Length: 119
Image 1: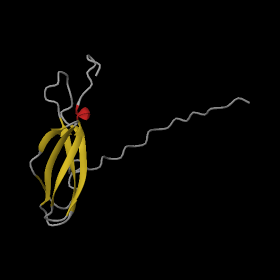
Image 2 (image 1 turned 60 degrees about the vertical axis):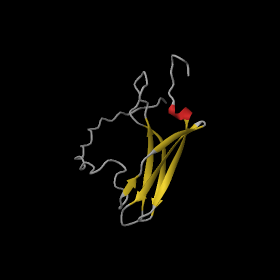
Image 3 (image 1 turned 60 degrees about the horizontal axis):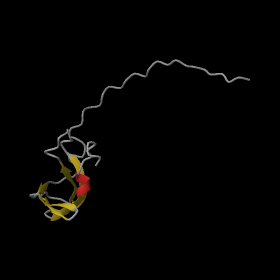
Image 4 (image 1 turned 30 degrees about the vertical axis):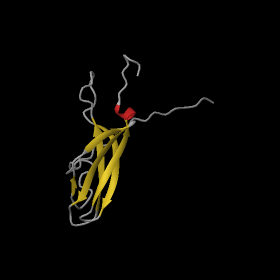
């Protein structure tokens, strides 16, 4: 006996009214405290770029902050992203505590593929 197929036509479900827009961008305001970032230093160490900075909890209670490191190519002959995430670290700090955060990024992760040169 051949298989029978039934096709049902349905009206689309009504759309719900849009929820209110978010008050802050994603990841903003997850801690109930405040953080201060110190100056960023960067150097090349062999096959890695090393970036360091100090993060301090300047608020009244303990909290966690996700420190993010972005890279950018200023003189690329082609269009490249304005920012590219190359490292991140979650840092938990007590009130008044500060900590040095270091990132070691392989130099190969900072490059881009050039089809003209095949590398």
